[in-house]
Length: 221
Ligand code: IYR
Image (tube, rainbow, N blue to C red; front, top):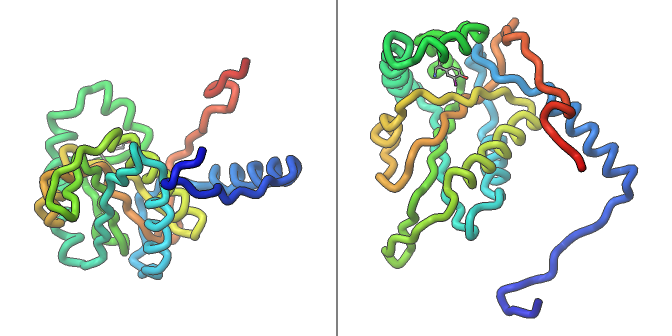
């Protein structure tokens, strides 16, 4: 490859033993991550959020279009507005939209339409995927695989925040187009997920649950 749009890859191969140890300890750390619904109101260092979003922004994306926007909300008034709008949708969800099958699947989580964590948690990160991007020249450019790309970036964000010592909840009120209006995001941006971020409340409880073992989620041949 000899194109002037290329540069050498910076890559240092590690010994296999180190790779195995690193992958093992990464797994041991990641399996400690839990979705948390009881938050402390303790503020968090904003630099952690900034760095975690930088890490998310390094994710691979379709044709490197980077079709994401992260709207960070820490203000009490905005968090309250988000809670009010989200709880309105949640009431409709629990009272009529959700099928009995869906409600049964959620039963072990003991969730309901009340979402106090949207105000208690110090930081809400509203993640949007962009179906198109408005270029500096004012042209509309199509993005490729925006949802897949933002899904990967979101996974990296969740991972970065966990490794930094914070807890998160991947929260998806449905529908959540109220986020466009409340956060003044343009129509080409579509809400993907609300990442609730902070420290856990003292004595926070989480559902007892198990993750499938390797044999159940992977095949090797
Ligand atoms: N959004 C609702 C319901 C809900 C849906 C799923 I899928 C979950 O994994 C958990 C909850 C709520 O947050 O209560």
